[in-house]
Image (cartoon, rainbow over all chains, first blue to last red; front, side, top):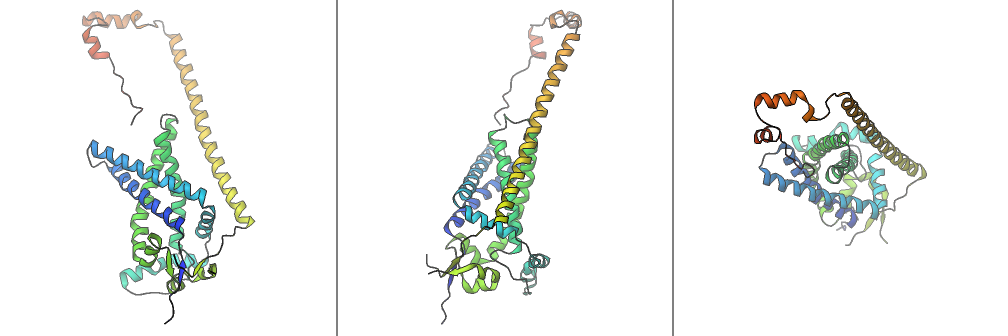
Length: 215
Length: 101
């Protein structure tokens, strides 16, 4: 029987960074929605704010460490998310075939993808810019509120709210369900970082040119 | 961790590097320009507001409240004095620290 070879899909630094986003962004996002809707009393809302701030710090420190310690991986991420071809447009037109698979129970032909698919590229662009914006505006609101002009504080508040909620909805409504649906990829990101070569050949055919045998 | 394949080393060509630096510079430059603009505007408005208040002050015939006849008439007609408990109750304001949210 042929051995099922493994590919290092996500290195340890990437997995740790992703964990920091999970442990930072998700609590900050949930409490952010609570802070917006204010459904509870003062004590509960105060606790939500403390969790929001703690989550924001985890996410910010994770991002800074990743950018400083893994610039090569950041550059690769840039290359991946901003490299769009006609295949990506065609992939987006059929939503990667996910509605057919999930709702109709049948598979359709989809254009070949690299390490990440077009939906993940779009998500990557949103996370990159959205994350940057919510971190900067959040810092303005948290550490610089008495120092900045009211106009900047007002815009920082509104931008933090709108971008934060949009990003949270995309992550909770799209990224997480689809991540769990693609179970081998989910296990790879949260656990070993490995992916079977057979799976990669089927789902990431273009990526096969970018990998090399370990000596 | 045992694996058979890994990704090739990242290679960034000159065009990508210049593009990245260009976008970064443009973003930082525009951001700083916008923020500086707001600060300059704020300083301008504060100075204009201060000048307006001084101008109003100079135009006033009675610049102190105890010399303001209309105010003194009000106290007289309502039969209480500026430092009385009723004046305290009606006009005194309290400081609220709003710097800590």
